Length: 145
Image (spheres, rainbow, N blue to C red):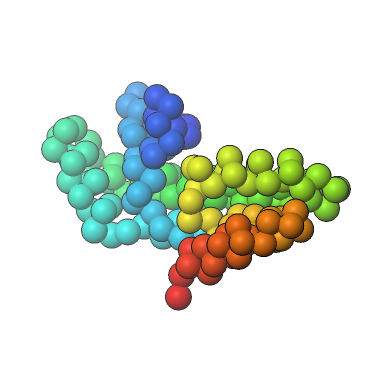
C-alpha cells in the first residue's frame, strides 16, 4: 500500500492507495500529536467509502485507516521538524529567517503550540513584545487543557 500526502494539492487530505484505488482520507479524522482517530468521523468516513465502493471488503476500511494514521504520525513528525529547523536558524543568529519559516508553517498548521511558542520568543528577541505576547498566549490556548 502506497501513501501520498495531499490530494490534488489539497492539504486537508492524505491519499492512501488501496489496490488500484487512490482514496482521499481527510486529515480531520485525526487529532493531536498522536494522530488519534476520531471515532465518529472515522465511522462517517467508513460509511461513505462503503456506499461509494460497495465491493470493498469488510477489512478494507480498517486497513485504510491504519495506514492513514501511520502517515499522519509521519506527517506530524515531519511538521515538527520544520519548527526545529526554525529553532536552529534562530540559534544560528537568523531570527528573521526563523520567523518567516514559522509564519509559513503556521499558515498550514494554526494549532501548532510549539510553533506559536517559538514565534513568541523570536518576536520578543526582535523587540516586538506585543506581538510576542500574543503568540505566547496563542501557544497556551493551542496546547489544550
